Length: 179
Image (cartoon, rainbow, N blue to C red):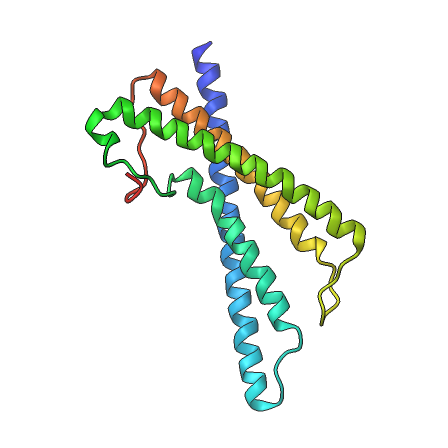
């Protein structure tokens, strides 16, 4: 029975790692594309004229990149941690504060996702477009919503991993600089 439980947990772990890693690649692609558009616009401005609407695409791509990096940051526990006082109480206190922090991040991510979903529906419903290219604004919101849902999934995995580590008496390992 314990083997089946650990196997499902390990599958969940592998799935979250793959999801977060895939989103990092997507975020990196967005940034490279934004840099390419900016460079093309600058070269175009020098030679003939800048690319019309380039700034609209760069804004959306950079925003998506930021959202895409969040699940990986959560998975690797790269968020800021302040533990000057807590570290004096030992690893158990550190584990519990890590769990509490991860729960707070998950709740806040869920709250942001809920409000973002409402915003996505609003943008879809009112048909808002970008000023120059007249692209629908909702598509960027929808992609970001998918990424936020992925972040909730990763956050739930991190909480489960915290609880598992605490139950097994292990120390929760945080990223360098986080603790």
